[in-house]
Length: 387
Ligand SMILES: [Fe+2]
Image (cartoon, rainbow, N blue to C red; front, side, top):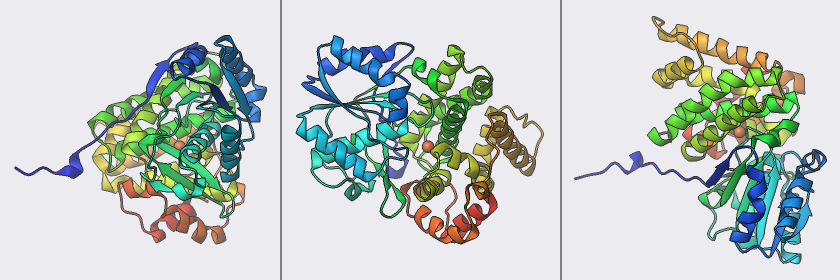
């Protein structure tokens, strides 16, 4: 009997505690892992919003010693990872906690990698490059989008080459993710929109990915439904905790889907853009999304029909090209409802930037699971259309 090994699918996820107040269990979890001293990673914005002090208090109540590291930029840089790892070592830490959005969480993953391997973070680009486990890692997301708290991805900015590198390994799935919708109450509408659309892109890319399967499809479709049904309302009613919870649940499910099914051309191209221009990740994705859907559609029209249906498009009686048109309209409409209207040109991207952006995009691991095979020329055309 022969087996088709390429059809096998694995599913990796952290222990997840979901719900209002989940963050307050960080001290207990740290104690369970035998924490002697915690490196608490965050960034200045999250600190200003009060979430660092909140976690510090919980750690103090649990009588756990800690040191705070907030030297993390949006799109965390490799040098910051190396500084964090140096602090981890000099302070004798044995556990990492991060509170914040994708940047502090990815930086914390990077610090864990460097701490256990003793080499520079930029040496770990690619899939399955880690050889030993990283220290215990507890993540507390304060945005509902990036899903670094459940994913096998760490994205680090190579500030010397102005590119982002993707590190993909189950070793960077945290031990525990404390997903607490209350922490997202301090996000402004722009960040709420960017991270929410990022989550939607995760779900769509995971669903059409060549690495998708039944275990990821259900989470991807649930995520599309939750984000489509709640994100625009949340922008209008930012103080509604129930809406925050629904969008965060959507983001979590999108994260579980993409972490295991991997992503596609939107992320490959947006990583390249983000490294080059230092723009918000979700914004980069938003500006590329409909153009990549347009490019991918013919490769997997049945799946895009399911996506259109899940986004509320009445697909009954429509032929494939009508569905394609209505799907694109719905995606653009949703972006407009949440206030994301710009295209790449507004942020200073020129035709002359496209060759180098494309060169980096086709090297990103996310391009490998894009449903339609994409050449450098294909990617250049998509960037041009998104200008
Ligand atoms: Fe993303």
